[in-house]
Length: 130
Image (tube, rainbow, N blue to C red):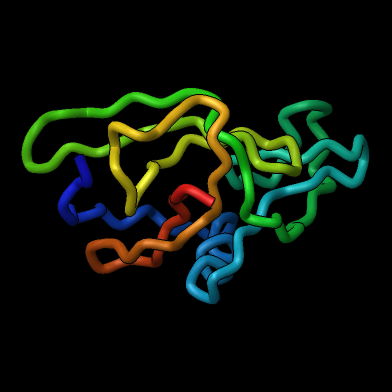
């Protein structure tokens, strides 16, 4: 079953997350990388969750990943798939799987990023089969 379109709420944008959403509007997926320990992380935040350093920078991700886990929510107004996708860069992010047959999604499936508009805010990254 392919899910019909649904309204996506606008995410809050702060000075800390603004570059992430500006890049999303340009069709680019950014993640943070700590220059102290080298680890990449997501969700966007200035402090490294691994070592606590505030020496982090934005880096562009490939936008390719693998479905780690997912669940199809079959409630109104429309069914949708929520998933954890592990990017090729090693970061796992919570997202939605879109533009596909929801019954065909599988753990281990390769996916690529697509950006979906929100209700009055910046686009957000979601994923579709690669």
